[in-house]
Length: 190
Ligand code: ADP
Ligand code: 5GP
Figure 1: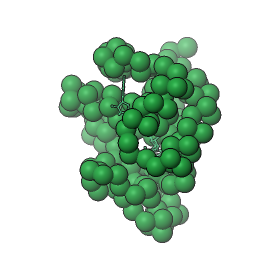
Figure 2 (figure 1 turned 90 degrees about the horizontal axis):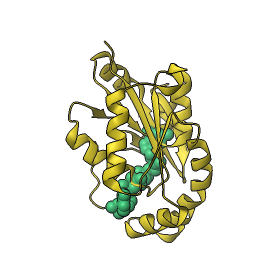
Figure 3 (figure 1 turned 180 degrees about the horizontal axis):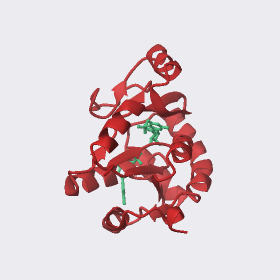
Figure 4 (figure 1 turned 30 degrees about the vertical axis):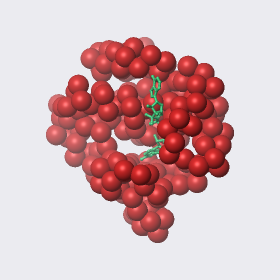
């Protein structure tokens, strides 16, 4: 039996990282893929833990060698999922989560239609902005760039198999758990 592949996306600052940390503490048998990125590490982020932080040259080289299952540019940086890690994990029968942005999610869904896609929605754009600012990890220009992506991402998110509004954290966590426990791909059911 192969593992199941879940894709979780949502605007920057919506609470994906917060939700996933809590979710993975409760579900230690599920793995989270570590992406490669050309973004600089934030305070406290560690190479090989949060991301594999690599140079633009290394990234382009990996992309040209077809090492990525998907990759995309987001807010001025490159992000990509290593194909070999995904294949190995799923072949071992382990369920895997990709926390990636919407363009990458579409690439994976196209290649692996059984993947279950979940979009985390903000309660409102105002709340999203408050959360992104409240995190104190980005400068003003970066915040603006990320907010500018939000509308397009929310539109793309409407096409995902599931949407979860992250208003009350506990409620959002319960809804995420329900989707994993059911493990069905809504589109495949139709
Ligand atoms: P993302 O990973 O989607 O960019 P984060 O998980 O870093 O977002 O969350 C952004 C900020 O919003 C953090 O400061 C986090 O503590 C806060 N946050 C996340 N979920 C909620 C929630 N349900 N209610 C209030 N604040 C939240
Ligand atoms: P951040 O810089 O806040 O860590 O991530 C920015 C965006 O890039 C988020 O939407 C995050 O989900 C996305 N992201 C992280 N890793 C990957 C990846 O491997 N591929 C793609 N396409 N997006 C990713």
